[in-house]
Amino acid sequence: MTSIADIEIPAEGTGAGELFEAVPSLTCEMERVIASSGHGLWLSGPSQDAVEEALDDATAIGGHALINSDEDRWLYDIEFEPDTADVFDLVIEERGTILSASASNGTWLLSIRFTDRESVSSLYDRLDEEDVAPTIVRLFDLAEESHSQCGLTARQYETLVAAIDHGYFEIPREVSMQELSEELGISHQALSERLRRAYRALVTSELNVSEDETVAPPMPSD
View 1 (cartoon, rainbow, N blue to C red):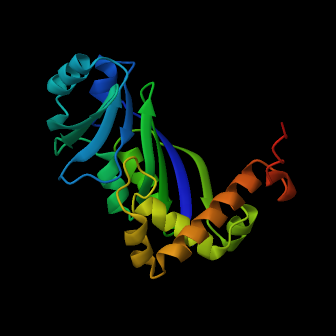
View 2 (cartoon, one colour):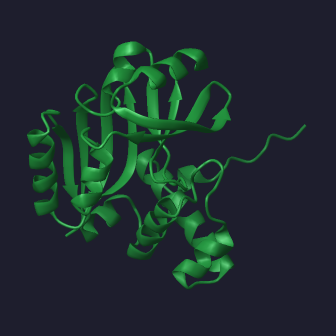
View 3 (cartoon, helix red, strand yellow):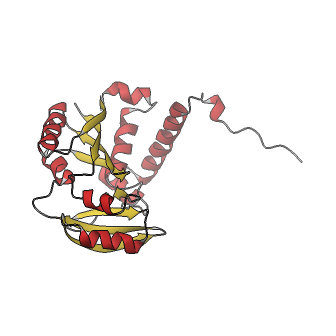
């Protein structure tokens, strides 16, 4: 049964630990897809000069290259040294899929999808062996009941998961709607309608409003 684990990990002892020591105001966010052998990390908080200096001085980082920039944050391709605790690689080795990963105030928060709970336990043990002191904040199974609790049908849920996995919600998008519809084996129109219904179901469920309340009131006449 598929499980989702939200895990907190202190940056100290990981490849990014020295960065937070050098610039405590640093925030990191993992890029879902990047064409390289390293990891794509959006870095922000301090100035770019301070970020570059911290990257240059970090002994756990074997190399880095600026890939992109967006206002006051910068996307770097970062490679950690072989003897460094690489949390991202450990997740992959334990058959996990990182749904999101961000860090601030010296702490990483990862949301990871696993095919079973045994993999969650195995990753926890691996992290503990690396002395990075993981904390499982939340752990739940994606059973059919979870779909209905969010107001989603199974197909709507599967479509949203596929959209997330393929980077449809990233900025900029990493897959077009046409490409995603081909991946799912449905028409462009069917995908568009399914996503709209899924959005409505999620908003209605999360905001705890009825279908009638989601109907916009008539515009006042002049």
